[in-house]
Image 1 (cartoon, rainbow, N blue to C red):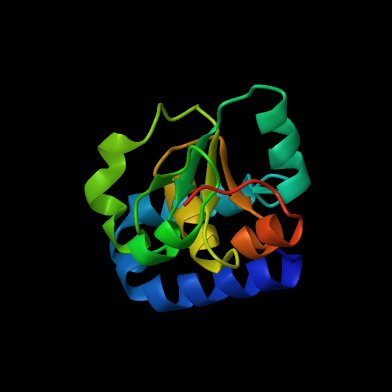
Image 2 (image 1 turned 90 degrees about the vertical axis):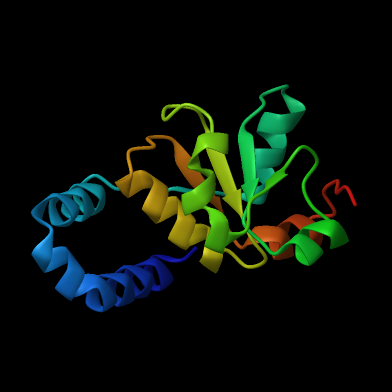
Length: 145
């Protein structure tokens, strides 16, 4: 995800949540901490880098936040489908807060929202698959149906 797109995403998120954040100092502090400490790679991982990790035998938790029908049409092998609107009800299905989680959607936008939210909630090793399944498919990387 480009820096500009991430900056716009953060600005829109903060603007839309400003009244709620102002009423909850702990939430405000969590958001500010997240933005202050955001990784140099903006919490993103490129498709070739993820593929290399998978090929090396690493087993990151691949969280696919698309709708079930999108997931069924093709997904990264081993991915777990938890649609974006159900993340809050399924936090217990996620691995430990320090485990590598790679969040995937079609283009990277929904994954960016979830990556940011999980970071604010305390997960420390969450990455957004840059350009999502569009890029994974463009690279002709393996998929399951």
